[in-house]
Image (cartoon, rainbow, N blue to C red; front, side, top):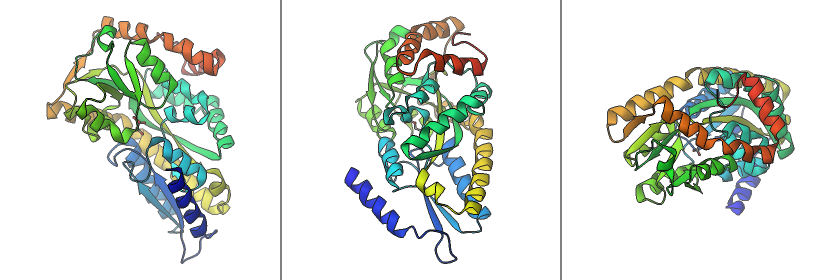
Length: 334
Ligand code: LMR
């Protein structure tokens, strides 16, 4: 795969003709792994619309949804090599490329709601985390929401003991690995595009994701139960290849920044509704039973996942977790 990405990168380098002229728009390839009809998919399409409008066609944005260009970890490599210019990977996917500080976003129950999340991403910590991307040849432009994760399986998941021995697909994240181990389950890293088939064929027993991802990937059709846990958050960092971004004419970069700001407001303004709508559709389809937990059952899940905090602290340091918690204005078990 690396060879293919390298070939694509050299073609991209040859066809990048520098400052835009009437004949040759600057092309931004924006690759992502989810469906167009999701919070990320819609924000990406909005960015395309606004970027092309504000630059008066001097920039052309090509959006490639649903892993049509690259799968999870390949897309980060493709961005670093310049084969694509823009991505919006989930926070979870930055740990494996060496920016482990993003692991804090994966901590179970660290965020009670999206408003609290915004305090972190719009605050000093959010800005500092984005700056860390520079060292990897990327520029962080924005934080985009998806929403909160739910658990699905062919077994009814109520108590922590229900997870014991089951195989769960996870994104490539040490935190998520620790989370499922804390539940006695077996985590298995897998690209997002492969999850449906893995669930269908029984390669894994379950998975965690947001309602919009579950619905648009049709996971609810191959899982008997979905438990409303809201135990973790999936959000994205919009990144561009730093060399590409720094090399753009200043006026174009300003117009693109404006388009990004507005696309972010648009996307983040409706992500919660999109997940609510997806849940309603899942219920309507009637193929999976949606299970809600009592406050006591919810508390037992929180307790079972607490060891994950220690695990993450051993890698990113307790001060970073404390800073995150301070900016949210609450502790993990509140
Ligand atoms: C996943 O791999 O489950 C998610 O990160 C996919 C996505 O981009 O929402």
